[in-house]
Image (cartoon, rainbow, N blue to C red):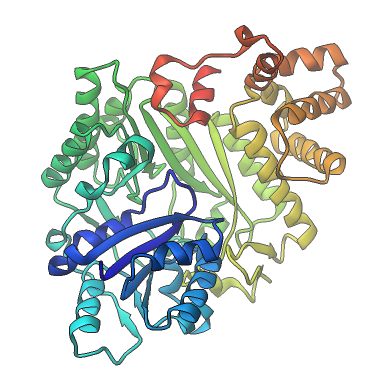
Length: 503
């Protein structure tokens, strides 16, 4: 083995699609190339040892916002103990503002943008000459038809234990300034027949969890329908062998033909991630986001009421021009539509994104360290932003988790944002913590807060006990019959969605 492809994934269940694309396109060098993935949080010395035992001459690291700090430490140590090993970097985190980054200074080479073609070429020049003079190489964007696809490189272990990431297209036609996809000129589709053949091969090998990374799955409705029909055919052929497919959906583009296809999926088979980000038209215009808010709301309502799809709908706090009252109004509007989960995100300044153009006018202050979260802006001071950060964390623990489905409805009442902010402020005041709150303790705290809102102890405890959290607590104390059970079809689902189905 001469060339090692590596990255630090956020979780073991993640499998790097990007590294597999590189491996698939190594050409004559593929036989001497190996893929070795790690997970963030590991001890740097142990990672170095596990890497160097293979005696690589070249190491290519995929660098992302979630792993750049740990990868920087890893590269620094490798350069100390094995300076002869050539380090090549790639990935979205190092593709922009490279001159400001310590990890780029430490490495030998950097490929910005697409690496499918440029990385094998660079490795060939390093190994066989002439040795590259330039440190930074702009990745060549080859036509998709010329790329080798990576799906056969998912191992049997990947298929059994990890989410499989797939893409029917690359790029995005939209220009939302907080997203790196704003730099794309358009979206480019892979040849659909070939792509579906690859999915057929994965399914035949036992793959059942497919997560599409396409930024705009429903951009081309004919393509969307054919992909969905592929999964529907598998479900119809064997309804007791569940499939789980995840797509990112443009919210205001849901024609009747697509609705008809979506309505055919059974519970637990389909998940959509939908980016609303803001319902404020002025804020949308500031960040170049085109969206018909009424259509988006109508489509989310239809999906909730008329389909079995599980919905993750995204909002972003901290966008330029949006104060807390505006965000709260958008949040309350979204709660009324009743998606299964509201992903409450805090704005991040991703390297290379155009959002930076608003920094001075809107007083935007970002954390200088990854993930570059906004700390304050003209409309939200630091203390206000911290309250929103805690709200987001507690919302994920209580509402999105599916553990408190009945209780959350009572908590939110007629003013969801205001009531949950009250709970968030109370919870922080009584715990001084946003992480590592055990579920049993959290259930007790929720019951205590309910008593501050007018319920007596018996009513509060009964309400919490009616939920997954209360059932799980009962199970811990020897009453497993009280534990809610998810439908059989949820066996292949992520636990969180299974809990939502059970409720």
